Amino acid sequence: MDTQITIPFWFFILLIFISALVVIQKFLFPGIRWFFRKKINLAINELNQRLNVSIRPFQLTKRQVLLDRLIHDAQVLEFVQSQSIEDEVPREVLMEKVHIYAREIIPSFNAYIYYRFGFWLSKKLAMMLYKVRVKTASKQHLNQVSQDATIVFVMNHRSNMDYILISFLVSEKMTLSYAVGEWARVWPLQGLIKSMGAYFVRRNSRNPLYRKVLERYIAMATKEGVCQAVFPEGGLTRDGKIRAPKLGFLDYMLRNYNHRKDRDVIFIPVGINYDRVLEDRTLLRTLDPQAEKRSRWYAIKTTLKFWLHNLHLARRHQWKRFGYASVSFADPVSTKDYCEKNKIDFSQLDSEQRFKQVAMLADVLMTDIEKTVPVVPVVLLASVFLQAKGRTMAKQKVLGNAKDLMKRIEKKGAQILFPNKDKLVNLEAAMEMLCFRHLVKVQDDSYQMEENATEVFEYYQNSIKYWLD
Image 1 (cartoon, rainbow, N blue to C red):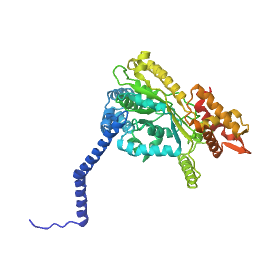
Image 2 (tube, one colour; image 1 turned 30 degrees about the vertical axis):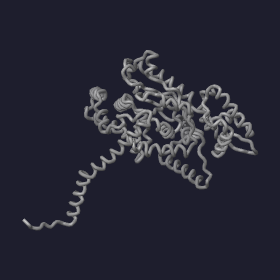
Image 3 (cartoon, rainbow, N blue to C red; image 1 turned 60 degrees about the horizontal axis):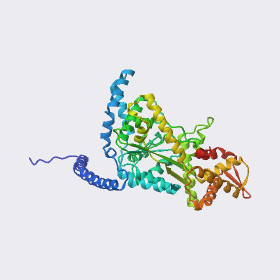
């Protein structure tokens, strides 16, 4: 009974390691999880008391539960069955694709990361790069909406900064879920973005099965009251003009919407504008069919070069912020009121009728967005230089024409958000920025648009085309 057994030293170490893993997994991890879960729940309860619209139970549901709900959704299963017969593809093959699409789409929202890290980062980045201005009166719209409603911000899309800016500005009122393109599906950005409540979308996918899975997720989130941010244009504007809306997202939200039974869906049109869009030249380049296609490595290299240059300027105390980033909110549009006023029940319409009605609602929203886009100093100067058609002008003439233009469009109802008492100072600062970017040349106190700056100035002028027309 007391015979000794000799084992190799490496085997002894292995046994200790396995035993330690078992102890950690069975005893230590549950306690750690319970501790952090308690802390997170307390933080969520505290947040919900401060937010105008509380974090929805749908957002706090375990991701695996949401995956199961989406994968086994009745409409998804019915679609899989019909496509299996139509395409003569085994049902199991299509269901495997549904699993892939669902895992790709569904976020893994983490309230702690959203507010402790995401809010801090977006605020710091936005305030570091721009002077952020919001129309004070329009922010009151956020306080007036029903807490039970689904809030959907519909915005013009000028820059990838839009995500950061709008998340920071409304985070004290509600948490946002938004769609991001495939550009963000890179490690480690992908995990961070998903934990912030975003979901990935294949923008140009024509795969009907993928579109069905995406449709059902958006419908589920909308029905459960998740606050969302949507870019109806479907992508960044290339020429500065607000593009015609793509109806997919709005249709997914309203396809089965019954205004008598379902919670209200409130659309809040948002206008965003910048003195400097970081991607402006890159976006304009995509309009040239003769332009040589550049690799992803070139894009990474150019981006790094841009940020290193700005860091170098900051080190020499020569760096300045990129002017104004201005945001304005229009009056909310209640889908329930809209349906009652126009005697529409989206859930009872066939595909053709529904698309026609969704297009009409989209036109209303896009018109509100166009009216709401703020006017920033660089936009005024761009219009003045384009009107001069390459002629040289004295500095006071440029500034005077910009102020006259500002007064004219302000009378029409345009949103001018930079301070009244400092308008001339702000216009002068914008002029310095244009000179620094080599878009305007100076000679003996005379200013003239550079020959290669026409497209860039048209890009900025197009953001307020509604008021100029």
